[in-house]
Each structure stands twice: as C-alpha cells, then as structure tokens.
Amino acid sequence: MPELSPIDKAKFAAAKRAAQYVESGMRVGLGTGSTAAWLVRCLGEKVRDEGLRITGVPTSTRTAQLAREVGIDVVSLDEAKWLDLTIDGADEFDGNLNLIKGGGGAHLQEKIVATASDQMIVIADASKQVETLGAFPLPLEVIPFGWQTTKTLVEETLVGLDVMGRSTTLRMNGEAPFVTDEGNHILDLHLHRIGNARQLSLVLNQIPGVVENGLFIDICDVVVIGHGDGRVELRDINQGAVEETKFDFLETDNLFTDIAD
Ligand code: 5RP
Image (cartoon, rainbow, N blue to C red):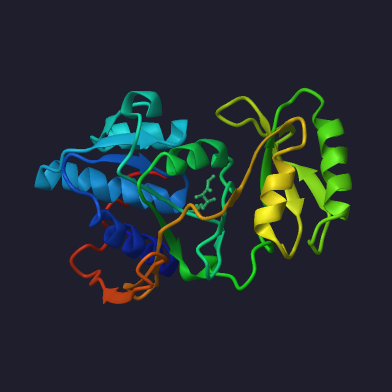
C-alpha cells in the first residue's frame, strides 16, 4: 500500500488530535470533506478498538454513509437536539478563528449543526490559515427558483461592500448545476479579500433567495492545525492557548487507506 502523502498526514494528524476531545456518551457533529473524513475514520477506530460510545450527527449524506461504514451510531440533529461537540474542516480560517466553509457544498447543514453545539473544533492543514478571509470563493447556498435574479441581486449588493472582487459563478457538477443535500444551488462569490466578514454575512443572508452563506463568524472555538511531519498546533479562542504535539506515523502508517473518501 502507498504511504500517505504529506497533505493526508497533515489532515490525519489534525483529526487524530481532535478525536482526543471526544468522550463516551457525547453527541458529536460530524463535518464534511476530506479532513472531516479522517476524523470520522479515527472515531470509527476508537468505537471499534476502544469501546467508545458516541452518537454522531452527520452534516451531509456523504458523511452519514462513511460514519455508518465505520460503525458510528448516526442520528438526525432533531433526534440529538443539542450536541456536545462538532468537529469539521474549513476552507479558510483567520486569526480570530472565523471561517469560510462550503467548498464541499455542505455549509448549510454544517452551520446549523455547529451552532447547535457547545463547542466547534476545526481541523485543517496549515494551507487553510489566512491573514484575511476571501481568497477562497465564498459559497452561497441559494434556492433554485429565480437563482439568476438572486445572482444579479447579490452582485449589486456587493458593490456597496468592503470586498475586492464582485464576480459570482454558479457551481456546476459536470454539465448540470451542483445540487446540495437540501436541493439548492451554490453561487461561488469571488471576493479575493473580505474587509468586514461579519457585515457581509448579515447582508448576504437578507437577500431573498439566499439560504445561507459560508462565513462562520464567532462559531469556531478551537482550530487544530496538522502538518505533514505529524506536528499538530492547537489554538483555543477562549483560553488563548497554543499547544504543539507530534504524532509518530510509523505505528499508524497506511491506516485507513483501504477506505475511500
Ligand atoms: C464542506 C466544507 C469542508 O469542511 C471544507 O470544504 C474543507 O474540505 P477539505 O477538508 O476537503 O479541504 O466546508 O462544505
């Protein structure tokens, strides 16, 4: 079996450290994306080998399927009602732990689940860290009805806001528009630099047809940053703490490579 790539090692290391936050009896929000998939596999391993008992609330059909495959009990958010912890990836995070999410098109469920949690932990490789949010196109979930009108309205609204770019594109899946788990479309906003993320988030969500934007403001509590050599940095917004640990991959090399993303 091939050795893990440095980027997968980074994601795995972050996921492994974040999994240490999870204790038996917890209700845990399970994020979506390639980094979150590592977390789900780590938790599945703990369920199988260490007798960890958790209830998982997935943020997408993809994650629900993977969680079931690795043996995690899955319930809906309405069944769980409130969660102890959500662990998810991100497309960008800044120094205040504000995020851009939705690169995988799941930010609507991800934001609902993270907001219904006592704590949100983001797991990421170091490339996701930015000075200012906005280089990654901001995902905006919109309902299919009148989406072109919504797009025009969004572009007009951006003229009055502190952003560097204003073009928007409809996310595609091959020849057809991408469809989210909620049956909606995604507009990607190419803003390049977001001057006031809090204001932008509020304004975008007021436009008719917009369901939810991918800015996560004051939602994330902890970011766990993984590196390709197994080092992990931990930033906690509430405690201001910075921790650094290192995982030795020799004992875990090739773990999970039999499970597809
Ligand atoms: C999905 C997300 C993901 O967390 C984000 O896109 C990061 O994904 P990856 O871990 O694959 O880089 O927000 O909607």
